[in-house]
Length: 323
Ligand code: ASP
Image 1 (cartoon, rainbow, N blue to C red):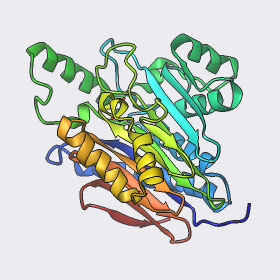
Image 2 (cartoon, rainbow, N blue to C red; image 1 turned 180 degrees about the vertical axis):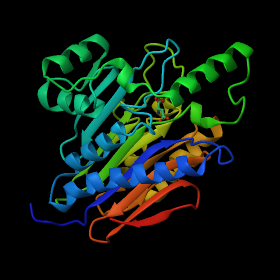
Image 3 (cartoon, helix red, strand yellow; image 1 turned 135 degrees about the vertical axis):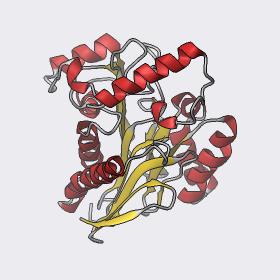
Image 4 (tube, helix red, strand yellow; image 1 turned 90 degrees about the vertical axis):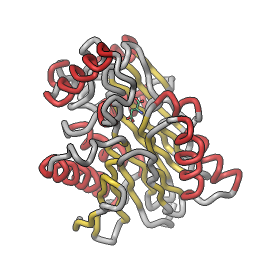
């Protein structure tokens, strides 16, 4: 197929960021740098005429390796002090998809999801069966302790103490303990869309709990006739509202612009019922949307050929940096 589109990449590193008053300058800077690095990783694929699928894979791999974000290394802990990671990927060209849930072992959960799509007869593998599949196909593995970080350990201790005291869910108003995920959506030069999402889930989640990220149609969705979506937020709400598919259906069937469709789901459907979070989306025309209904969302985007990367955390703090 000849080149018909200007490639675009949009990423997120999770919604519900740290309260601005508690955010240190160093942490904020490091997050902007991490987002820019992930954009560069995905953009490099698009620049050599690669696919949207490869671009979102590379962007998410970069974020999984960055301990600042809740996916891969740096994943949050379950209530039992373990890691259970979820990931999904979808190709908008043919709606092939792959997902894994509740795994701890593969260094890059997104590669596990992609392997389910490309090397199995299935779409979704969970738990022990998923772990065995990942070992059998020879994915790079790490010991559980490799995924640990001090910050996430402290968040678990704090959350468990808070629960013991019986504090309400919004005890200190700090949503960062609840949220975090990484994701990417892209449009390539061939006009194809793709989405990828990877997460450790929510701090102190119940063992066995699966959020929206690996659920195709909820946290991850891509179809070339609608749009590609990667979501982040309180997963239970995102599953119930089939967020990814809902945004795409509004574009495809109701003729809404991507921006209106994404805003309607995040601000009108989810916000009133307490479904905090956000999403990133791109359509086949290269329109993008990055709405969120909470204090912030680690996010970034880049259009090939502009020479500029855009990163942001809070509302209105977007930065431009050279590629
Ligand atoms: N959506 C993820 C989950 O519920 C968490 C997040 O994105 O913050 O597991």
